[in-house]
Length: 387
Ligand SMILES: Cc1ncc(COP(=O)(O)O)c(C=O)c1O
Image (tube, rainbow, N blue to C red; front, side, top):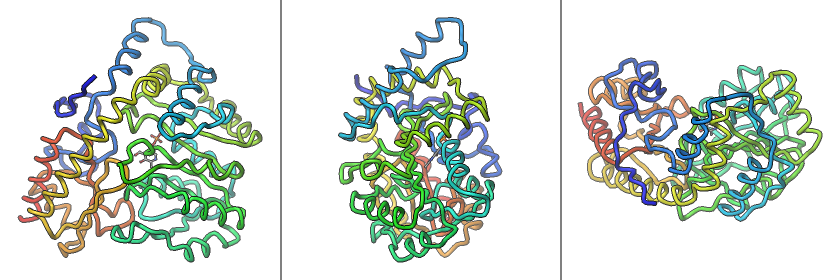
């Protein structure tokens, strides 16, 4: 099956957060969005077929996730994609990755304890840490030119503090797209074991990895004091269908999570469409993923070329993973607010300010769209900056 990712599909009028509610983020609605991380691509045909079939059955009752069809689809996906075989007993369902992160944060730390993170980082993490009354313990990643390397001394200093109870990692990392290497993961694990710090690894971006890098699940190296959270929703563009999963190797922690999921929050009955779409995506979506990665690579090549020729003041290095372009705009010499005003009011384009992720010297552009939209967006970006 050949997918046509060039096809432009109008998303307006679908309650789309990215398109219909763009004004909430940028203050006006007459702009093209490159903001929240979903894609402008249709889901795989196998997913569409599974959903259509399920819709034809006109009863949409409470739905179980705890069965072989669900778990085997995940095990096989990791086996085929990552040469890694998780124990099916480790797999639990969760309504969202961020729900899993928040729940484990509350299970494994107390109010006032510290959560170590690599910054810049996905904006929801700032909220989940601070609004759960935990302390943010940032460790800054190095520059793009240095491969966003980890400052091991800074990490150790943070982990060694007596109130640091959790290390929250995203692998691959949002917004830089860094894929943590086996050596980095092993060293992180060793430090966390030394200082009794629980690891939460958010691997939601694990599938979209470009040829130069290889993703490794952290549970390859550690099966104690760790949870790995993941979901098919980024890769296959199904976040509106709801659903994610986790690998928790320790039985006591699985039980504790299930008490939270079932007893305390009554969230254990899954979305029918979330379950159906995830099974279908993992069982039939390998070919889609290959074509998606190749399409995104081409979009990144176009963006690199455009910036070199038209906007050489903006520095960009192709990420190892994700569909997020993390662009260094420091040479423009503008404040984040001044740059946003130019982009939004003159260029009429919505590109996320790096400030949202903890670095105002950057912009984060979601390039998971038909190339015609990217071309128009970059043209508008140039126009706005030159205005
Ligand atoms: C790193 C990361 N984690 C989690 C999410 C959201 O996942 P969920 O909707 O399952 O909470 C995103 C979405 O952009 C993300 O980039």
